Image (cartoon, rainbow, N blue to C red; front, side, top):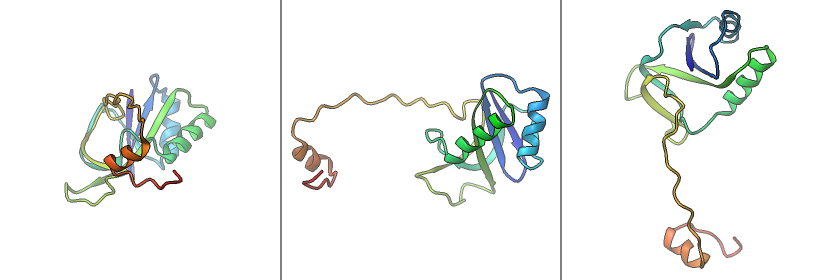
Length: 135
């Protein structure tokens, strides 16, 4: 389940179980007074991390919640609300989304099959990898 907290930023908190009232109060404090939203989704324009990339910030935030005695939180990410589609962001690390919902962190990509490479030099040339002779 994902709960949303709105403050200076919008925080998405993914947990394995329902958060208790005390947990929500602790998270309000942690997020600088951010309000816990009852909605299961939030509409608007938001810039945040790609779902495939758990940020170092998230890893630290989850560890902080564990030290605060909050159990079951698996991921916390921070989103910045922007005025529209023309907002600037780094597409390698971030994504612009119009809705944050319960599928926010769900990854639906199928892995590609493993390719066995017999001739690394030919594969390097074919794929344009620019590997040096030493590599």
